[in-house]
Image (cartoon, rainbow, N blue to C red; front, side):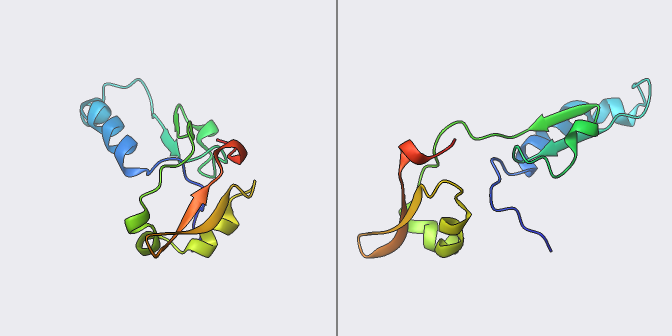
Length: 109
């Protein structure tokens, strides 16, 4: 089981939107040949989207927004801190809740 710690997007939204547009073309065989559509959730492109006919690539444009109320329930804070390659994420406490703080000037996105 391999889990990516740096996705820029969740695959389900863009994939569903793309397939909603292309579904009739696939169903009615209106395409001239086999068509390969791939999605990469980050710039690492572990899904080899560069080998596809249509590639959708998610990328970070802004530093992440934090929801302190749910952060501790959604991820393991030490793993989130360790996954940051520029050490822009550090542990913090907000209203006695364990959370993180992001140093925006160090964030590479």
